[in-house]
Amino acid sequence: MDENVTVSAFAKYRLERAKQDLSDAEFNYEHKRYLNANNRAYYSIFHAIKAVLALEKVDFKRHKDVLAYFNQYYIKTEKFPKIISKKISQASKIREDSDYDDEFIPTDEETKIQIDTARELIDLVEKYFKNNL
Image (cartoon, rainbow, N blue to C red):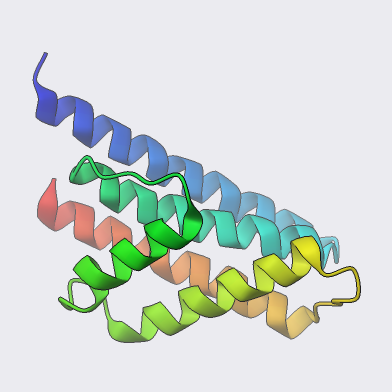
């Protein structure tokens, strides 16, 4: 089997997973389940990034390693716009607060921003795939 087909298929699988996470985030947002929506929006972002890394056959177990690698090799090299890095960092912080801080109460606006960031990154990854698959 052609290894590039396998790598490409795996990357596309991860992107589809990111889209499903986004759909779940939107559903939770519509039902005012902001903690769950923030979690799913973050995982949409995370899986979209892992889709890009799959093209290189690069993977990490820890989230911070995935994000650091993406920042170093895709943001700093301007394969993706620098502004998305700040948005990803914010989404990561809000996800951690949503998941682990019992006193954190996310707002409608904060949650919508996370979902918009996930949608924006998915769009950027789709454009990246069109040029690199």
